[in-house]
Image 1 (cartoon, rainbow, N blue to C red):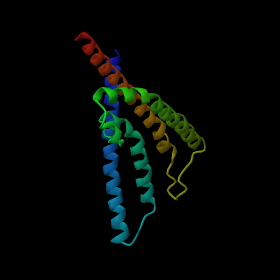
Image 2 (cartoon, one colour):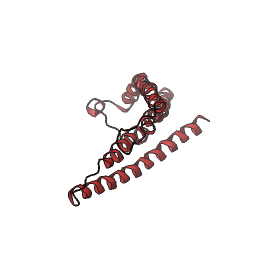
Image 3 (cartoon, one colour):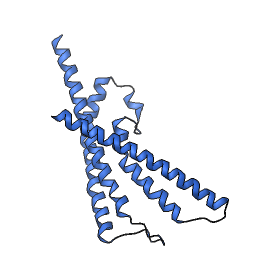
Image 4 (cartoon, rainbow, N blue to C red):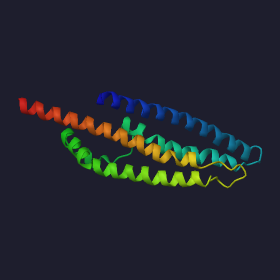
Length: 171
């Protein structure tokens, strides 16, 4: 049963990461359009800035679980390179509470921030008046997906560690 839940977490984070790739492609086209407007037609549009900055912020938040799923996140390998695979797993298990606190802070703080934005119907203040709360809600949602993916990886590391310990004891 737990494996089914873990598979769903992987599927959701994979799907979210792929959707964020399309958002990045959209933003590239918007930036290109903005550059053409500014330099070719001498008619810059400040609204295009809003169509790039806020979706990209959502990409970073909502793509974090995908990056963790595929081990594509930034990390300091200087110390990890010198450790054995078993020691790496032990270190990941020991540091997991720090990861949980980080994610919970993002979830709680991000939710409070987004909820306030929703309650006051916050906009960018431009003529277009882009609503900000959908983008702000991407932080707690993304942090939740990151936390779930981290839990999934923790269980995988604990399972591998447990299996390797049993193999050593059976020799």
